[in-house]
Length: 106
Image 1: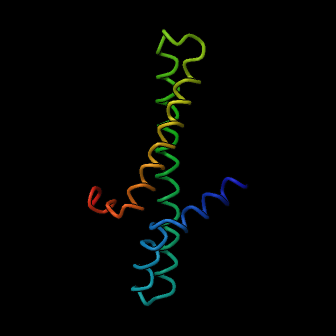
Image 2 (image 1 turned 90 degrees about the horizontal axis):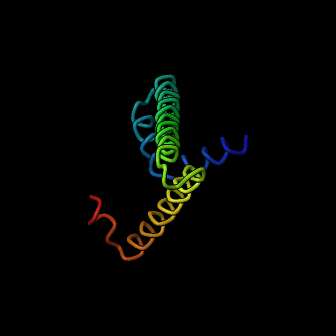
Image 3 (image 1 turned 180 degrees about the vertical axis):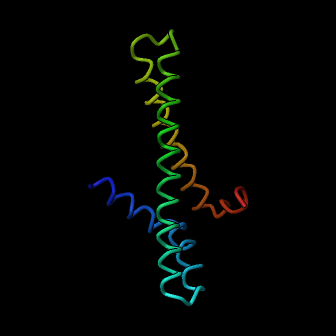
């Protein structure tokens, strides 16, 4: 339950929430706007869940296939993945603070 709540907060906090609401506001029809928002919510959740599942399967298989890491291969792949996620977050914050994020990722 907590995971779903955190996901909802992250979804609303990001630009996806704004991009999801703007077309609904322009519809000027309450029922069509609700159908659009529900479709947006379901398709976003499905897409993110599918990506996470595929990433998990690929990283687990990679961990098992790397024989030089022994039994701890999955752990090291997960550790590398976590480190890479933190690094991307730090770089993202640095680029935003320098004001060059939009220049690099237009």
